[in-house]
Structures are given as C-alpha cells and as structure tokens.
Length: 216
Image 1 (cartoon, rainbow, N blue to C red):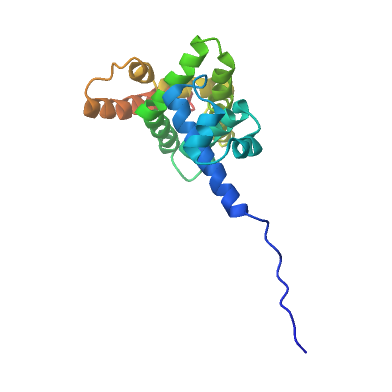
Image 2 (cartoon, rainbow, N blue to C red):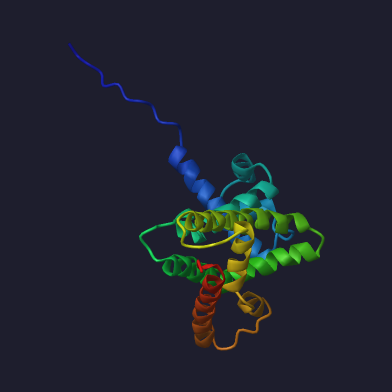
C-alpha cells in the first residue's frame, strides 16, 4: 500500500515577511537619524527598504508605531536584558562595571548621539511625543532593569539602599557625567582621549556609587 507523507504546511512567505520587516526597521532607523521623524515619510521608508508602502503599513500600522518599534529594537540590540543579569558569584564592583562600561560607550557612540539629536530636533519643532516614545523604550526600560539588579544585590546584603529607584537614577547619571552632552554639542576633542575618558568616568562613577551604598 502506498503511503503519502503528511507534512504540516508552512505559512506562505513567512521567512520573506520577516526579512521585509527587518528591512523596513533598518530603513526607518537610517532615515529617522538622517532626516528626523518629521522629515521621514512612510513612502521614503518603503523606497529605502525596497518594499511597497502597503507592506510597511501592514507590518507596523502607522509611523508612530514604526518609530516605537525602531527604538525598541535598537535599544534591545544595544542593551539586551542580560546586561543587567545579577550573579551572586561575581563581585558587586565587577557587576556594576559591566553595566557602566556598556552604557558609557553606547551613550557616547556618535551614531547614537545622532539619534538623540534627531529626536531633539523633532521636540524643538513641537513633536514632544517622539521624545516620550524614546524615553519609554529607552531610559524607562533600563531603569527598571537596573532597579532589579540593585534590589537583588540589596536582598543578598551586598548593598544597603533605602530607595532603589532613586539609586538607579543616581548610578546611571554618575557613569555618564557630562560626556553625553559634550558629544551632543560636538565638544569631544581628540577621539582617542575621549574614549579613555569614557572608561575613566565609568570607573569613577562606580567607585562613587559603592562608597555611598556598600554596607557599613
């Protein structure tokens, strides 16, 4: 008796759909940085991605949602959740330095600074909701992850912190100093010197934070 192999049919074009989605996100990210939000049209995104405008809308709905997805994907690529993974077998200073160095280099990266400038340009032109989207997908997310790490360290008796949420804000401010603003205003001077200063500032920030919150 002949048998016919039964195979589960695959959804039509699924891998291709994901490729198109990725292409749209990459195109939108490039255009948002280059032209800011207000200067980027869905037509331009479609042309840059090599897809139809209908395809862009079918994946993301509207420009606001596309922008949010671009920011979310970008932030998660730069700062994956395991950046804030707590490990009781690792020294607290080493744990905090891992976060500090990651943040410091990302915040001062010229491409990321370009993104900040583009969004600030939109805010200046009366579009503050785009800055709010960045804040929600960026700092709000990272502060929560940082709070979780610090709370775990407190629960283990490795730090003494009364207000963990406030301490999270303090930590992320300490490791940045004025370096991000200097990048924003184009006052970074020699690139090699700036790179070494990023690391030195991150280490100083961690040291200051630990002096405040290590158990007495």
